[in-house]
Image (cartoon, rainbow, N blue to C red; front, top):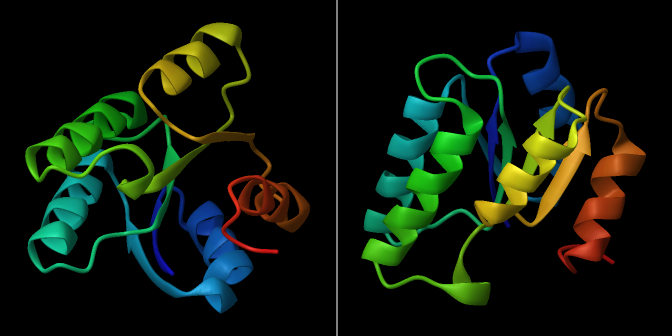
Length: 131
């Protein structure tokens, strides 16, 4: 599995990396702009991400906009439906509007921080990425 972790907080990014590194090859991005670039390059190189953990509150381009742009890039490359990356939002935002916006943007999961190994593994099992 190829995984991208997008979080502007060093500690959060590294904790999540430690939780998922055994599940596959992991890359990190510190903002939405880097995430979009990483996704585009991975698809161009025919090594697309299977899983993306995406924080919402990011510099330059926030997670909601990054999610929209990632789905647009996939669409441009004729990647759709179950063939797209599974995107799990990871955020401190626990309000209905943020959750609704994320799922309307076509994310597959939503984890409210603090992110724990149990929360991550539950999402991955629900998405059938691990057993």
